[in-house]
Length: 343
Image 1 (cartoon, rainbow, N blue to C red):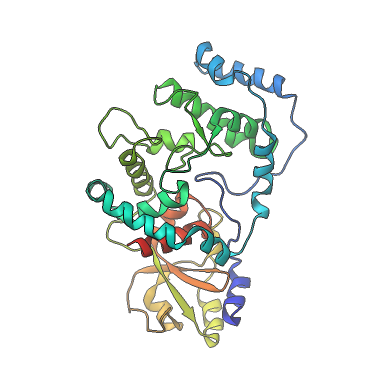
Image 2: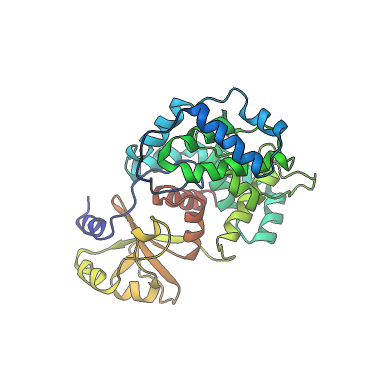
């Protein structure tokens, strides 16, 4: 590893955990005591759901023959251990085939991508990059029954509060007629459809862009892409701006960087594992250069420094919007770099 990158890695402790499904909570909770018997827990959940106004018919349908899935629990407990390193993670997700398919989809869906961009301000390559990362451009949306996945994770104590809330949101999705229980399938973590939205994200950000009266992120490509754009727009995506750039730092600039730019203290856990944002002109004065060795522009655009593995990046406000989709640097940088290659 380059010495400069190693020092910065120790300074910033850049996030290394590979992400799970989109919009899942990041820091694991401390595990309390063993959960109660599942049948007892499910009966109490059903009583609460009935008290919230959900019908017995819906609850019968959603909770019929429900049992916890051990493989879901194991996936949740072991995801933080699957840390391949950024280069391996990136190379496994951003392949030539993925880039080629992304460019093909950009041509095939050019008209709808232009309309989405006009409404939400998010460029086509960014939408395609997230679509490709999340579900292989809609080809791999998951086969786990959503209610079984969410019930398993809500019963298992480690992150029960979050998944219990998602379970009620999933009931709301069905109760409002957006999809039926049998069709509601997705990832082991309860993420759904081509954008891999959690139920709460579906309720907040899914849109009907093709005008057929349904917010169908499962089968409608226009709805899926527009929903991703709406999500990023809600998290502050700025039209006409980039996500950031890869940079290099000379060894003799390390001390100045460490003294001049403190770690960030706000935001999600990945955002706290980067520096505060300062103007590009300041990074230039500190000796940071473009990855090709050229000087940075003397701009007032604010950027934070992210270090992962042996690579360093200056990231702008739009990078925060990508982290809003999935709070992990491995994921966000892969989306950003994939978008550049598609674009």
